[in-house]
Image (cartoon, rainbow, N blue to C red; front, side, top):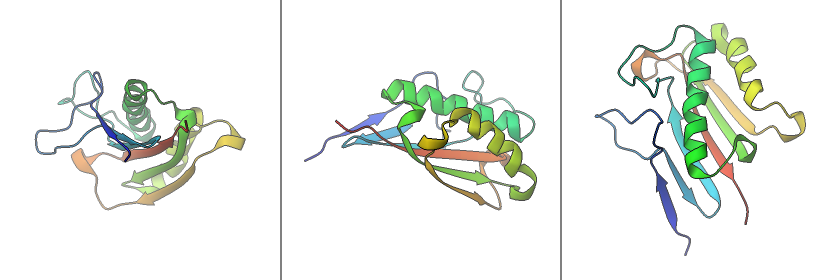
Length: 135
């Protein structure tokens, strides 16, 4: 039987009081990272950054903290799921930030990007990842 490890990453934006979840769960070499909003981990109750590029960077900052605490790296990503509250307006600028974190054309993760009606805290973006590191 495969064991699970639940990760709460010190330094990443904490879950809001109304939501209970782990930042990530590892099982059998797979890491499932909870969707990250662009919440500043240094000021979780503070305002979200202005604009899609800054919000995407902040979401990736949280993801990076969680991956570091988990012992994984962006290069272990097999799947990314991105939610945009205004797909047509924000896709290109979000994508430019995404490609700074995933820049190796031969190692791109699979991905779904969808437009949604609303995200928590009126965010413009939310990103979750699935990673794998074989033994």
